[in-house]
Image 1 (cartoon, helix red, strand yellow):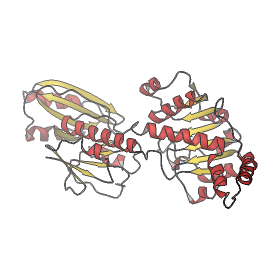
Image 2 (tube, helix red, strand yellow):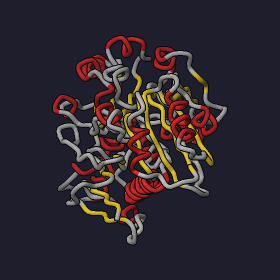
Image 3 (cartoon, one colour):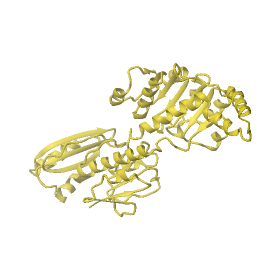
Length: 389
């Protein structure tokens, strides 16, 4: 029986993907084969040696010590795109809220208490609405920073609203490019996008190169009076610089899913309590994707949507399957194949992929993968993880 330890409330639709006949899923399991979580922080926890994989039902993996796990052979999965529609719709709401003064006008309407006379109330309504005059989105320019699963949806959505869209993503993948409308103008650099955009929406992960990248220099390049939307990660902005920009009018509005004490005090900051992926559909989509990825990895050794191992898969046909991970250096694969040949073991099928300094191989052989064979492969220099699947 394979064991999946869960943290947080994982949607039942995802948990139901694990076959009850071969999987035990519980938050209190000892020596699990894998961990499935959402926001639980693993940075200060030691994982049992039994753990083969960690899957996060969500896109960000800041709560997982990915680099520590890599050379332990622990594959870390996320679920890119599973919550993309939920975030896209909140970006749409952010655009409308910031363009039309909707939340402020609603607060004004709620303040009109104690006026019994309908005519007098209507007069107050008409008098007050003048201060909430807004702008239409049609014809305005949205700059989308990061054109992955969410950013592409946001860009395409904005085109449907009649906006001009500029996109910037120095790491745009071929798959992402296929999702993106040809009507999106590609910016050569970040400052070019910032200088031309009435609205800016951030859709990049919080990594070393992006933490605090919306700083004073970036804001100096930004169009006067632009509105900045950040539903990705709070760490992407330099908060003092953004607050200064709000106070000076360089930014006319900041919309974020990550409230802080400083931002709460800003009248021109619209803040949500981390609502980006908080829909029933998004939580189910993330849980289902995470569960399916874990099952395929544990049962077949296939890897999809890992943040630290290469994308790799091979259909199961016949024979016994072995997978192994090694430092991405020359001759390791050859040494393993020579070992199999010396033992008179025939390779039925094989696939090998690499990612940065990690290589991963799936091999189907015509004999049972006895413990002695697994041990011999593990002893090959630079191999740091091997298992029979």
